[in-house]
Image (cartoon, rainbow, N blue to C red):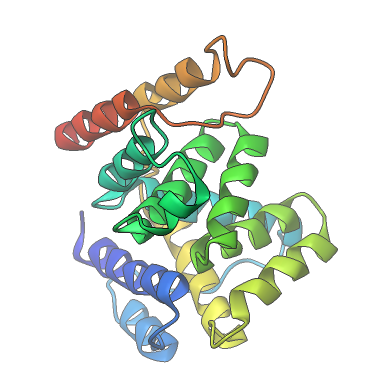
Length: 231
């Protein structure tokens, strides 16, 4: 990875934490200044693409980044463990689960895996669960997802959810869009057919055929880990 690509990765990491936690402001101006100082320079996204296409492209970048991020496997494994037969069996038990934030992040990662494997309805289902549990990252993905479907009312709803209670402002969101556009045009996708096959295998099980992919397996987290270790 080049120094410039590494810098972009660091900037996006800061953006992701802001969207998830909503605790600190990310310095968009400083980030863009560092990008401009890189050897390749930086220009904003082209104006020839429609808002629908731009939203789809940005979502694809954020999905890839989420799946490839360090710790993603652990979050999926945490979610799979909680959803197993040995996990909480009632609402009250869920309230006592330690590290519930890890499971919420697992919902976000699993949704992104499903989206990248072209199971868009299942991805939307998991994003909605994560957003309902407080994930700003999932709310932003839903905002982009509905924009990409040409559904501005639904997209506006999730943007409102993203920005309420001290969430990121319009300037911050514009900055994330600029970063995503840069990554889309300058960085490798980083997704292998192997992981696509794993999602297809999960979706083709007898209990989920012709329905939403409603439960990640612990095995997929293990295979995900082996994939990350090899790349």
